Length: 622
Ligand code: M6R
Image: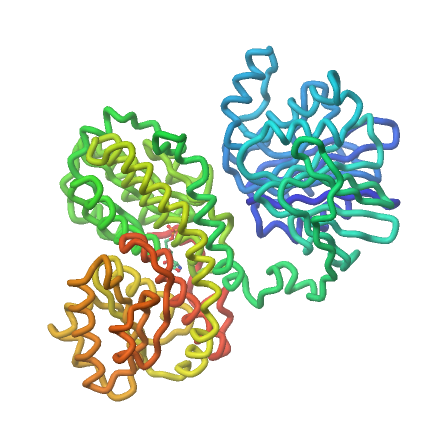
């Protein structure tokens, strides 16, 4: 998830691009860069690692001339290749006359890279994007598309697999940008004698509110006075299948995609976060991790797994325990990172420590990783931030591709972590042979169905928001669950505590009668996460008894259950239905209403849900 912006018109391009990048920085801030075409047929680029301010300082120092009325800029969220100057976009071909910026992941880039290397091309970065610059440069230089930038771009896009929004420029083609999209966003901004392309309308909203949303596999050519949309699939035929629209949000809302808070937007982005986390991790026969510096031989010798993490990431680890134990028959312990190294855990070379962290910088988790490595355990990081400390110090990495999470309360990263943890479980099962290849393939296919199930869940949230407004002044809310519903209950309670500053506790429903039931009083809202009656009939019936017990003592029961489960309706004061999914994967849908509930309660109480009091997004102190 990166931010891209392009401009062509009568004004100097650089100020428009930098303004756009400032508004898109929420999409990534590992590095940034610009390319500008001058009036004399030359292309000039500038790029810097770190925040946009670094690039601005570099440009202000005057080392590079960036005058011209056509150009493009990029703010990066690193996926392939660390966050360095050389990996920053734009990337150019060997002539330095073709430049490309990219948002997404080119899945077949290893194949394309090898092909270029065999042809003697020297690559200057570790990115998947650079291969596009070389392919495009070559298509423009010779062959059937020579000298035709749109046709060269279409031909190049046909060779790419994965998700991409690309914008390209060529020094021989003044006043023109060519952009294309597949599975990543791209909008055109239609101004008076000027045109923009960007990953989000926020980039150009102060200049024009007339926008066009591109469809799948489309290519657009913009010049100052025109835009033309075609399909880049074979034939590159003209198409009308795109959507012009008028932006009626103000600037503040535009940065948040029309939502009041970033967290609202991030909740909506969850289907994409899960889809992107799964992308490229199954090669048709096997699960593949990102930077697997641990071979199958080493994974086969593992006899115990520890999961270490903090807060929401810890809850994702609790879900992982159920999946990894079920699929691999390995014992799994889940430990708060802050406790792990102070109690002398039993670790050796055959222990796998899975360290989960959105930021990759959490001090407690980082210290747990260092402790584990000192004890010779193997460490696998599950992380959302490419190039951060925890993956750097680990033996292997699996990145969650949720994109930047701005809201302090973690939402889309939790779902992405849960997804990545399932992949870890399947990778272990495959290496250890506890699942046959066809079983692993089947589980992966089921995972691929989850983004649609999450999207379906998101369409059912109006009654949850209504409930949030209704119970916003309650003294406390309790959350109950069993099996994978237990970590979901803990996560629901954490969201409510941190966003609404309300007393909230999550319990394993079976524990209730051992003490917490004393908390139940007339009208107390209790949220119960219920398993599927089809696949977990025994647990379901136990949970039904738990619901009856609390209802009899006056609790207001808010039951999260599977659609079509008629048995729970009589015991639910409020029933929130989820789509049917396999029991082990239920956290991916069951967590969504709890996030929405917490956000709505906090909103009703008048709090800034993006910045809860006393909290920080990355906790870099122990
Ligand atoms: O960056 P990390 O995933 O390591 O952060 C861990 C916790 O600090 C984080 O999940 C925290 O609990 C969130 N605020 C929860 O919403």
